Length: 401
Image (tube, rainbow, N blue to C red; front, side, top):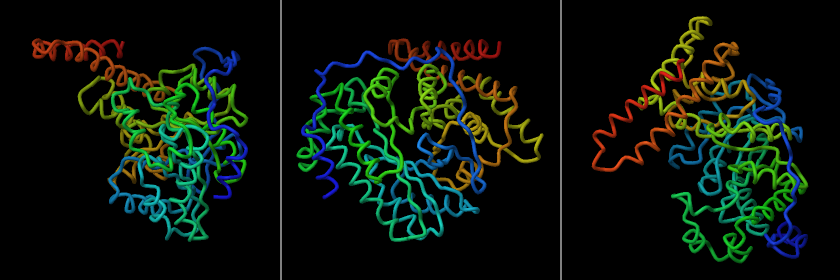
């Protein structure tokens, strides 16, 4: 409470007005150039990188945001046990997932562990006061881990979204605001009244919490290039971490270039569902077979079996991109967890180029098929499905040329 009051006293108002003149300065970066790859290090057998604030940060983590609550303790404990050299463990979740307390309890019995937890502030809690409350609630939920003094807990907090967007089907802005606890509404004004700029007050709160030593790093998620430029013009502390989709990393080269020009670490989500699931569903089969072929060649060359998922994750990690695959399977955890990915050999330039081409084809096929199917009238669905199949064939033929 004392910390909260002290932080609130620093700001006479909790609203950052959209009426203030927005700075015209943008941070120019070379178009279509992604910049330098972050330096990859190894710490106790696991791949890491160094954030701009000097924090050593794992490149491979475990996503538990949408896992069934009853599966989280066993999968988190297994991730810790598989980390035989006790390198840093990374868990990714969010305040909206309501499972931080489960993660914390699962780590209570860990021995001599360094644990990084990435959590996020939901868009209903944008604004200085609400964000401060959200982060303090997250820290309280994670506090069970502090009972074990041999665990070094490092908490990174991100803004999950820059705003609630009514154009995104699963976002229910007014309904979510209406169901909030009264204490949240008391902490700060409705961010829907300040959609363009409420996140600025949130960023000020994260900066103050970071300065107070309550969190180890701060960052944002799902900000587009314009939002990021606005943040870089507004901020006192440059974000340490950016979390975005695999699609964004592959196709939004200008955003990636901007991030790397400011030494902001990129952590990718939706890697497995966003890419490999499309191949398993029959989209872009030539691209998917290319991935299989590269994985087989890698396996034969090194005498160890490597899966397509390991190949994909390693392709990202070897570019200095963090990954946080989600799983409830112990076999998949063994393959795609930090120790498994750290053991994958460096890809040759030829193999890396093949994987990149295949990934682009899979992601583009996903988007194109969804658009084509959406535009087919219901009375033409049977014929439309044939068109989709033809489109897949043409897409793969183009990809292989």
